[in-house]
Each structure stands twice: as C-alpha cells, then as structure tokens.
Image (cartoon, rainbow, N blue to C red; front, top):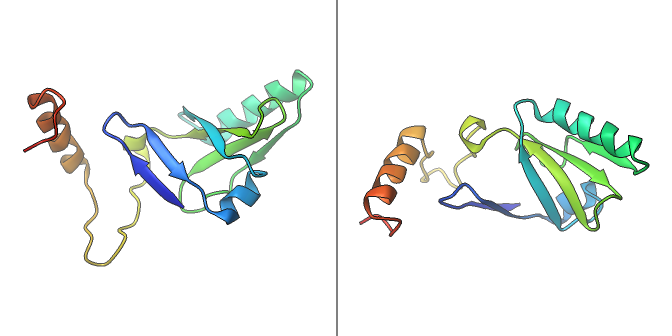
Length: 123
C-alpha cells in the first residue's frame, strides 16, 4: 500500500493486491471523515440495504490503518470508506529506521510556513 497526504489533506492511495481483494477489486473509494468510523459505516450499509442495494462492511482491508470500507453495488468499482480526520488518526510507521515520525508540531509548522509563502513551497 502506498499513500500520499497532500497539503490540503487530500489522501491518494495506491492499493496493493491484498487490499484490492478485500474490497472486491474496487479501484476507487469515496473517503468520509467520521467520529466513529465503524458505527457510521454500519449506518451507511443499513441505509443502502434499505434502498435495495447490497452492502458489506469491511474492517480489515488495511489492518495498519483504522479505515472501515463499505462495499456496495450502489457504486461501480468504488467503495465508501470511513475514517477519523487525519489529525486524529495514528501516525504511520516510519519507512525506515533512519526516517523520523512526523509530529503534530511539524504539521503545524508546515501549515504556518505554507500560509506565509502564499501557498508556495516553504523555503
């Protein structure tokens, strides 16, 4: 799984084959921020079923990230996913021992630099 978090909190994910298998091959997902991802996914699945669609809640598609998926035939090749806001989610593990964990202070400092440079890359 490869993931990029952009400056505006847009998340781009390139799933691996194991994850694709768990989400029924869906290549796209509509991400929704939720206070309780599992509860909101269950509610969405119940709503979809009440409308005559199939809906399955998947909690283990990405075991290292607390994201809950809803697989449904209401969407073509797309799932719904529910997750906490990026600032309230666990930070990913470093890519290597030499890599350091990004802290909330780093994010705040970057946001201040970004605004100070009118959206240009910080110096």
